[in-house]
Length: 234
Image 1 (tube, one colour):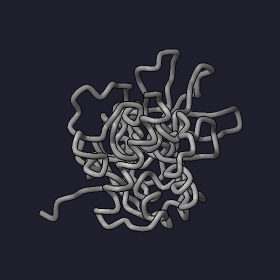
Image 2 (cartoon, one colour):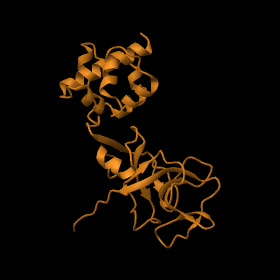
Image 3 (cartoon, helix red, strand yellow):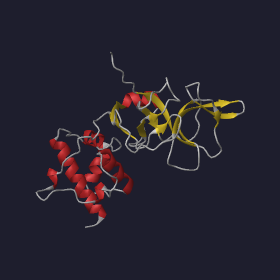
Image 4 (cartoon, rainbow, N blue to C red):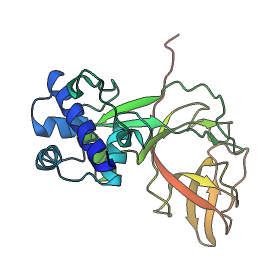
């Protein structure tokens, strides 16, 4: 059995499970499988249209699986219609955003080995995302990222989840960014970037941390838009 047939049978099983779960229209099914499949494209895939690598990857990730999940037989012995649907599949009209693995240092770059996250995922309404950044990005582009350290306090508290567009890799005006400050890829920081007369500067919200020029080998890994603040009443 070649990869095309495996993906086709997996897709048939997914659609059958979605129908049993109440998603009876092709539009609703496409929305549940990541939101990038139109109703007509769902019908074409069901009819035998070859599923390419990118579509298979996006469907796998939208369901919360690793990218090669659609490339392996997932249907049970008793029939493809019994394949389970992951409970984290995105509902129609919403965009699922997951926590990124790394934590941005707010005062120093760190890797998130076992940092306890308060929020692991959030589903935003598509209309809200469109109003926030102007369009609805493809699945996986938006991420939740939290920081460690105090250099961005009181604007961002340590461990506070923030919404980031990882598709932004260049400076787009003054704002808060997810940046790397050296040649290594194993650490990032959450900082403000500001364009000044003598160039681009890295700025902290905490006045105890002085600003400094953005280094020539610095990298921009995303732009932050909103924070999720959780505070106790007493």
